[in-house]
Image (cartoon, rainbow, N blue to C red; front, top):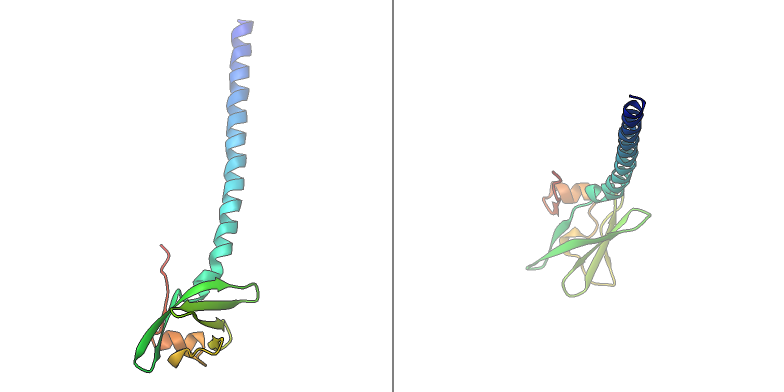
Length: 121
């Protein structure tokens, strides 16, 4: 009878240890997931594509990167590059024109339908 109760105690301790381990892993996984979500937040602020018209040509500038200072860089064909910040105006980089996007804020690009966002689920 003593060995059977000892076996039950040992089994119970293993179950408790397993539950504690699963809880610890779950907590650390949720913290890591939260860090990933926080890392993606700047992507929610900027459009994935900005459509600009230059003379008779439409250009699709795609989001290339967001720097630590909050400046987003967009690239299109023919090595055309532009930048914009959350509070700033769109600028062409390297002397290439950015068409009717240059000088607009993100709010103005949104209002004109030129900013296209990716909807997260």
